Length: 360
Ligand code: UD1
Ligand code: UDP
Image (cartoon, rainbow, N blue to C red; front, top):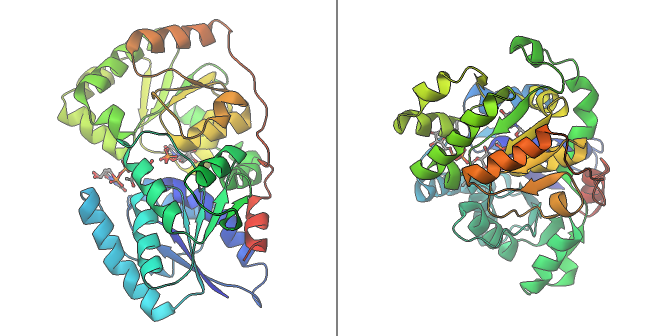
């Protein structure tokens, strides 16, 4: 059975790696083919994850690069269609909710090649979010829907998707976390940035609704200015965010905040090390909301909604929105020792890829 695995952007690599590892265990049954769309392309947004996760070089690199949603999606569709026509796989597996996920799912569906979606059924309910459009579209045309939670299964059923297509398999990203959590302890990232265990905040921001809007970003920065005087903030800067900070003229003032450590985007092992040892995390990332829940580290999510409600109901995540007063109040409360503890959601057990591959 020839199975094409598609990866394009940073969070995809952590979701593809466990499935890749599981497929290559039985070479007489599966022939996996890895396709990288090139949506993310900087070494620190792409190649470093191949090294950290021990992924082989992709069989196909489409090199699409950046652009508007329509341009990027169309470029991926044109490149991936050629791959499908020459490889004629039995299945195409897409992960997550990025533009690469959508483009490749559409290509496959139109060529009548079965599509499997890993991380199906997540819904923020917010259609101004480009990822929400991608989720809805991909789930509508996928043949196999691998859901990470029972709520995700319910979301799919509510949209009229038949039970037979839906499988509750757990969270594949947590397979990668369990595999590499100990290895991550070897990372030297804390020393490199003069950070002490339990005495800093880990921050990531890249959501378009937060960083592309000048007023929202200004508000978040005003909260960070106050917080950094109480606790150092380690902030690996996503390229979208660096670009916006610079375009809006905010970068010099952030660079002048003594206790904010601006870092280039870090690899997966460094990211885990930073999360594991943080006092708490502040983020708008989907993956970081999940990883902090898995690690038992408090997380404040700077968004109005989340497609990962189990991290709030069961895990350590709190949705705080983007109003500066609320961000400061919630962060100070954690700094003063008031934070919720959580437990692992169902099937966050490191065996999700095993369950997925058993269903092909
Ligand atoms: C994308 C995904 C988002 C995901 C995020 C993970 C979509 C719609 N968005 O957002 O869901 O959470 O990846 O990180 O698919 N850039 C570089 N170097 C790179 C990659 C990007 O400089 O290697 C810059 C470019 O200026 C580009 C911008 O970042 O225009 C945004 O990249 P893009 O892939 O379009 O969206 P992300 O914000 O990364
Ligand atoms: N991550 C990383 N380096 C960073 C920031 C995040 O390796 O500098 C990891 C993080 O640990 C998680 C994934 O990237 O595994 C999340 O990706 P991202 O936040 O880019 O996208 P999202 O999950 O929001 O789609």
